[in-house]
Image (cartoon, rainbow, N blue to C red; front, side):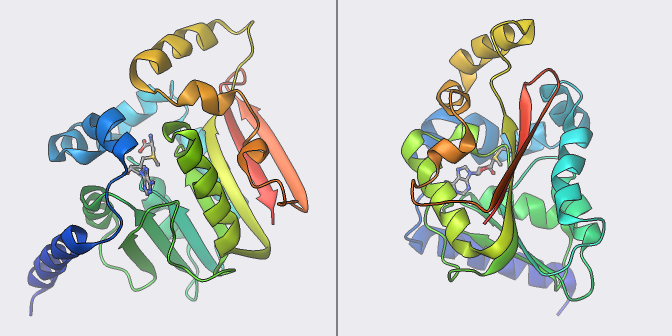
Amino acid sequence: MEKSEQANMATSLADTLEVKSNNPIPSYLKSAYWWAYLHPKSVRFFERQWLINLILWGNFDRLRDAALEELGSSVKGHVLQVACVYGNFTEKLVARLELEATLDVIDVAQVQLRNTRRKIGNSAKVSLSRQDSGNLSFPDNSFDSTVLFFLLHEQPEAARRATIEQAIRVTRKGGRLIFVDYHYPGRLNPIGYFISGVFKLLEPFAQDFWSREILDWAPSKFKPRKVDKRTYFGGLYQKTVFEV
Ligand SMILES: C[S@@+](CC[C@H](N)C(=O)[O-])C[C@H]1O[C@@H](n2cnc3c(N)ncnc32)[C@H](O)[C@@H]1O
């Protein structure tokens, strides 16, 4: 059977599974972000490197590389990427994987997984699965590193807390959790006022997210061995790394 036929079969099987799955698309995603992630036309519209870079004020490469440098220039072990990302984030991650390394990418939207598969092609090192970030099916301590790129600010508090809890659970002791996301830039940064306006219109949970540190959204019993936080672009973005 040809590769394209195999891919088509996999796609229709995945669609069938989506219908039967007990991981429905979360209501916040359907109501607040359908236009960005769920509609096939939105994928066609947003899947442009220059546009994603523009949305991040020209910081996409810098923030992507900040996340990837935490994994190292050549990545060993098992990595989990929680949620798909527009642009070349996953392609660049895959390019760093050593022979024995693996990458799992999960997303709750099949259309996003299909888009990621199209970008990275077929690779035995990479598995894509439809899962809710708040209800991961992986056993405890499955991964050496877990990376979340601009997911948390799009989630309401309960989903955000569940996502962090699950990310901690599936990352092994001594492993690392890498978050790149928005950060409150402070009252003196004029971009902060502009972005707050954008958030009010388009990102209903983002202001709540940046009002506190990421560790504040984690279960209180979680005591990371180490927390590293660095901000970028006048404090508008952050990379926060927990050593579990
Ligand atoms: C990583 S976030 C934002 C990334 C960034 N804004 C970009 O440029 O792509 C977007 C992804 O998160 C996924 N997502 C949102 N809530 C999710 C959940 N509860 N579980 C799994 N994936 C989720 C969406 O389907 C979407 O593919």
